[in-house]
Image (tube, rainbow, N blue to C red; front, side, top):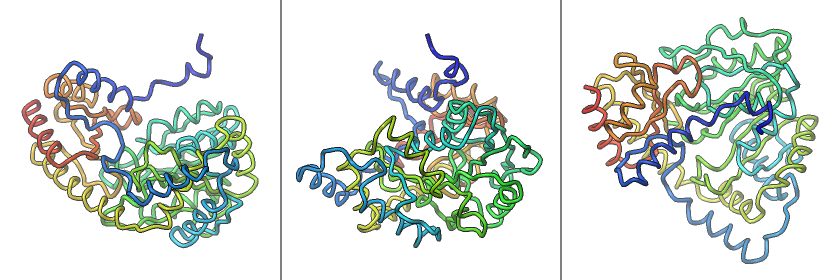
Length: 380
């Protein structure tokens, strides 16, 4: 029998949509899947070579729980130079994926009946992580007409508010928060003595704006918990490698949870992480350029059909308003059954997403173009 804790949590809607598409594929149906958030590029060769070399020279034993020293140093250097954070290697825990880091953070900083703020819509796994920690989610609305920026954040703060989750560039919207938006969030956090979890996993997949880390603002260094990883920027989803940076009294309980659960990230994989950070960055730039081309084709195509969709500033998702046709759940089901196109209903990411669908353009231009034709035939 499942525990009462699990009864508060629903199945991952993104995985549910992907599984439905995969079932049809198993039945021999040609399904175009725009569901999962995974780059369709291969991991750059120099990263694979570094990990393979490490494996063959015997780096197959337990790693230090918080990560191998050279990787932690490389991460600290990256955070200092690129993100303008005052980061030390001792303040970093390397995790088997950024998702693991997020779960460890929630378990470390949230108590029963605390409240954590999510900006609606938000990535599907934040809310379950909050609930697993015994806390509750407060959903703050965002404005789709203004880059999905949070609306009236201050009004949702109370004495139980412990944490604000910021995800920029964001999933599912692809929204990138500018400096002023982040400054406004930082001011609320400082004025009310609230921690901020900054999930920056998509920081390098950004198009026409610059990425800003909220932890770089004055007064935010000690109250920001920064999460990042290698999955999206370096096409390393299957490697499961992430990290968290925070002040020492937060890092210590995070490390305690990791030591009693997953122990550490895989040792030879961490050597691939060093190569990713310290090696050539050309593959990242090339991947982002191709994502941008796909974004433009997809969003322009959707608007030409009559589906309202803003161009996302980052990540590789289009969050399209389908309210002229039906709600997102109905449209997603129709597209799958009638057009054999799999998308994720926006309701998976929060109440405000109910009239939207999320379309991942982490696939080829040819499949995007074919998908647009099928969507048009099914809806118009």
